[in-house]
Every structure is written in C-alpha cells, then in structure tokens.
Length: 435
Image 1: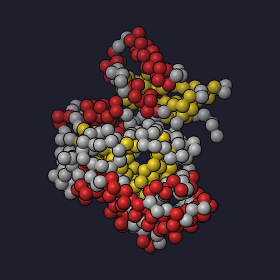
Image 2 (image 1 turned 60 degrees about the horizontal axis):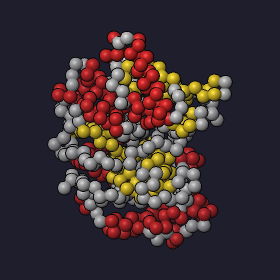
Image 3 (image 1 turned 90 degrees about the horizontal axis):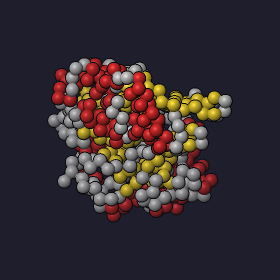
Image 4 (image 1 turned 45 degrees about the vertical axis):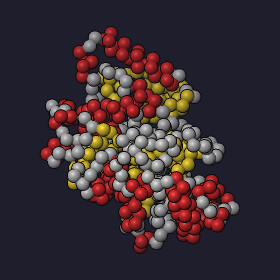
C-alpha cells in the first residue's frame, strides 16, 4: 500500500468519484451562474443554463475561460462570494500583462492546504519530518501553499522563502531538514552552492524534494537527486485554480495524480477546443468544483500534457497527468519551427562537460531569426584544450539540430557566468519585436 493523506478520497472507486464530481459540478455551475455576472453572460451567449448541466458528461457544453478573461474581469469581476467572506488573495507575477488576482475564503484555504498535505505525504512526509519551504512567500502561491500543507501534516516547518542560499544551507544542516520544497532550478542551485561550500549529500539529512512552478525534465530530476542525495517529486498547480497541489507525484513517478474531488481535468485540441479522448496529447483544462470565492469553470491552462487512468502501483485511483510538455503560449517559433525550451534542456543535461545552466537568446536580423544558446562549462573543462571545447560545441549543436531540425549558435561560457535565479529561472531572452 502507498502513503496517503486521505485514503478514502485518493483510493476512491471510479464510480464513487464520478458521482461526487457530478454532484459538485452541478452545484458549482449554479453557484457561478447566480453569483458571477461575467460568466453568466458567457453562458447566456452560448445558450447554456445551469439546468443543462446534469453531470460531468455535460461539461463540454460550458464556455471556456482564459487568462484574457481573468485580466478583463480584474479585479472583482469573477468573484463568486461577498468580499467580506474572503480572507486572502494570491496573485501571479504579472509579467505578461495585468496581474491575475485569486480570492480565497477560509474554506478555500483549508482545501488548498489539504491538497498540499497529500503531496507531502505522497513524498514520504510525516509529523516527524522537517520541511524547508524555499518557495517565495507573499503573493506567490508556492510558499503559503506548501507551508500550510506542511502544518497540516504536522512537520516542523521552516518558512525560509527564497534567497540567501548560504543561510538556507546553514538551517538545512543545523535543523536537519528532511524535505525541501522549491523550484527545481533553485534546488539545483542549492546543490551547486552546497558543493562549492565543500559539502555533499552525506552532510545533509534531506530525503525528498517537492519541486514545481516551472518546467523541468527527467534529466534535471536525476541531476538534482545526485546533487542533494534525495528522491525528487513533481508538484503542479496554478494560481488561477488554487496554487500548488492541484496534482502531485507518488513514489511511482509516472505522472502526477490530480485531486479529482476538487478539480475536473480535460484535454482539448488547442486550436478547435474539441475534447480529446484519454491518452491524447493536448491542452489541459481545469474546472474547480469546490472553490467558493474564485471558482473557474473550464479554465484553459495553456499547458500541454496527457491524461491517463492506468492503474498505479501506489494504490491511488486519481487520474494522472504527465509533466507539461510545453505550453501553447510560451512555445517559441524560430524560423518557422516550434521550439520548446524543455527540448533544449534535455539535450544539455545529457552532456557531462556542460552544466544544466543555459539561456536561449532569440533575435531578428535582416528579417531572419537568430538563435543562440549560451551554455555554461563545468569547472573541469576550463583546463581543456581549445580543440576539445570546440568539439563539445559541435556535439551540442549537432544534437540540438537533430531534435529541432534547425541549427543554433552554441556559445560556451565560463562556469557561473549565467545569472542564477532564486525563483523561476529565466531560460529565454526573446529580443524580437513580434507584436
């Protein structure tokens, strides 16, 4: 048997989960229609009434919500509860326009923290663990979500936030942290700094890490596990739906279990909006069926993934989603070719002489795209000959060309010359004026 926070829900039969989702969806659609004028107008325009939704089989009748809708309705246009019932907001970074502000009642926060508790327990967390939370706090959902989940489990919680990495390591060693929660790029940076300070995995007590908020590959997972001597678990979430804990990995690590008692997942064709059958690759859409203050129906995440209900050895019956395979809105189109940063990362992490720190620089010269990838050498390569460095450049260039079908200029740079991030790593610098 696996490790569960709520075994009744996490191992519920498909029939019982369907019945629970049907009941909650019907109630939620009525709640949203009666209380959110913005979404009521969208339903009316599509000719859909609450009584048309009798269960999950009718979900496809509802209109989609997008980030553009959230920005248009900012700040209170999608609020489904009186402001006096709300106790908190969380917000996105706002790097591509108006911030998205999500509202929470106390009940919403309790359910969110319960989802995060499931993720911590699935990673082996118990009340005897020390959980070091290095996600950002404040408006960012990472810190508050995992902090609350850790409290629910009963872990000793270190609310470190990000930054001051040497202090992070000092607390990690002094207080014998056993679970680390942060972005994967920051986990790698902690491991790198630990090594630079003369320590290694045997000098810390970490056993597991829960990493999310940015895309990362299986190669990066192995790299982090080697650097920190841990088992690395993925967690998924987005501010618009609640935050981290929408889905989480179990020990099998063949996808992330979605908390289906709170979120209904669909996969659609991103171009047509058509719902695709299980096992199809497409855009992930979520419907919140328990949130009170900010319940989004059929929200388009723009994440590309696959859903599967194949039996899991952990015992959970919750549907699993793959790691996001890119996004419909952060995909780069270079010289007419679709490029995802994760494709480039997978190549670089297989190179023993390069580090997983890189930056993609795209520009436009004389109406033609330029495509450069800056890659850090590891310390051992500094003493190598010019010839061996040139061979590494050619190897990376060849492997990138093999995967993408286009050539990139590979620039090898000195160790630690690419700026490190204590939050989400900045992997792409697009200098083109494409709008």
